[in-house]
Length: 137
Image 1 (tube, rainbow, N blue to C red):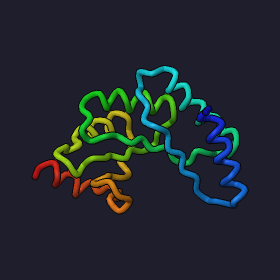
Image 2: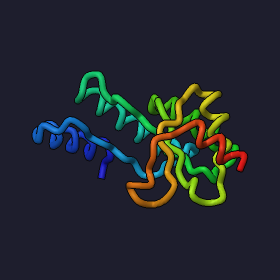
Image 3: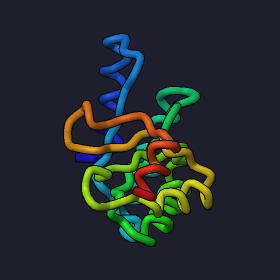
């Protein structure tokens, strides 16, 4: 089905239930797939039209094992969606996530959360101090 229509329905269902927070999680998108990037731009337009001043936060989830490609991925997603923060996942493996430093600096995006496992309790607030220690340990 049309992702824009799904988001439209979700917004109106949340409003009817007087919900304060609506999380819209899109499936993984490849930045080189033009049609998928257009879909995500359309989703943002639906949100902006239906909720003035929204979206309030757009987070890009990046896999810590992604290399240099992550910079171009983050740049393209930021242009399409107005990303204002990063979630870095898979830090529980061998990945160190050093590329996120370049992304944060180049695109002026804060790292907000890190994933160190597969459960909800494994999603944690980003700590620059802990991250730096892990890079050098």
